[in-house]
Length: 66
Image (cartoon, rainbow, N blue to C red):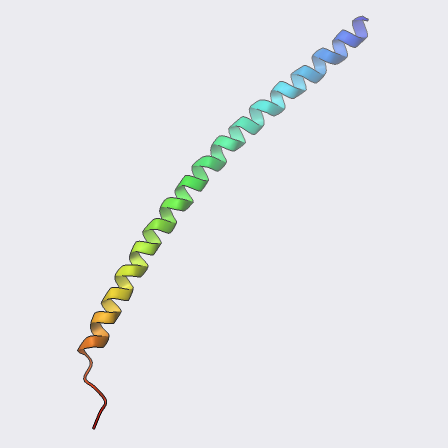
């Protein structure tokens, strides 16, 4: 009986350690995801700005009609 309780205690200790590790990893992954989403939003804004500037430059080019 004592051995069974010790084994259960050990398993519970391992479970708690695993839970804490996964909780920490989940937190880190959520932070990374939020940062990645922010980076993507910023890159999309820069891409839209570049596209608009390119369109404006193309409009200034003279027609190639002789």
